[in-house]
Image (cartoon, rainbow, N blue to C red; front, side, top):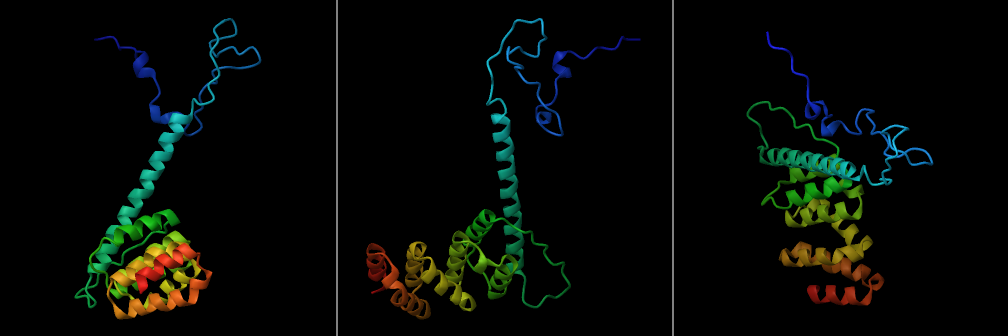
Length: 215
């Protein structure tokens, strides 16, 4: 019968992911005014203080959290693509997509992905707005939402575009260009009307740029 091998130093080490997790704390490198290490009171060895010792692990955790948020957005994009492809009249009962709540930065990423879709039907856009209350989000989110509205000529939400052009003039310049490039008479009329209402409040250089696009 073979004797049991004792685990060597390499096998006895904690896994890297366990550091700083579930109450496992690292032993401080220095302690007390004398700055002695955890090697023992009789040891004269000193180590310099290491205030940044936990930074690499903290950065790793933050990066992991960001990856998780991005993966969540990717899953939501796939759900919306499926929702958009479903016919108006279903032949059989299908399970409804369960949509997750998203942070503002995630909503920006979601909308940017959806802007890459060639077509989105009005039913999908209506549900998208109602699910995330897009017209009540911050300017970055509303800007992407307005781009989506303009691209797919979703007339039910043109009021959101008008509001954005009048209340967020600094970010609205690009949107004026989108409205004119579309070559849609209703969108071009909307752009000119909003400009006439807000040009007095715009700074001179921005007003000149928009005027060149519109006329």
